[in-house]
Image (cartoon, rainbow, N blue to C red; front, side, top):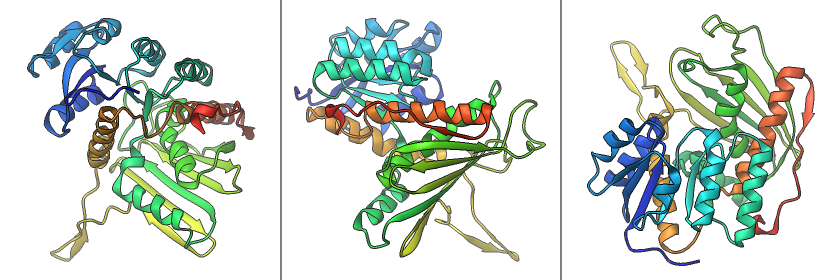
Length: 340
């Protein structure tokens, strides 16, 4: 693959909360790149974001931005249903892409993306599963790879949000939140998820009407591990992400949030992050910098389109398990050689 220019010109598609934060990150934190174009269906919002960046143009059509001479790579931060078209357009220009999760909203469209990338003959997509770039998760991954704790037997996860945004549904707890635990499970353990069960207690009084919150999700893996996820998106007190691996010869846990503990006036305590951007700010910084560095070397690293597809397939099984009850197997196609 061709090595990219010294300073990478990046088009950011989608200028909502995540996209605007990526624009800020590239301009203020990341080295070796600059934002040369932004895209949003809301023309005024795109113009407002572009006006804050020297030399940045505003577009409503992703294809127009990707055809620009000063665009060398793309970040897709638009809503999931728009990802497939943007990815296929990027492939037409052979542009490297950092695509925020989901790769696409369902397994069928993810397979179409997989096939289109396979036809290129090389990877072009890195999927934005940012927990792989979190310092604590990276330490946990490195520890497991040493083998000193033995084979992983169980993985316990907790994922809590202060409150769900307007318009959320019971299915979105899985598709928009537990999706991260799906990828973390596959990455930490090196296993594929083979079946899903979803249990739900009587909903919390803090949950909006009609939303089954919290939920308890159980994964089975092809490596013989059992994984559970508590997802509680209306806990009311903060944003928490925790994981504990139980192995044959020991356990390891991340996410306790005890970087700073205070003692004063008969109390002790710390600070609980209030959203994902605060909790994973360093991980997002590290993720984007790694993507820029790899792109400038002419490489594609990090979570692949296969990872995005596998998570989409697990999501579909989990939603079925939520709606129908019982254990639902995960149906995966054979992994193409490009992603082995």
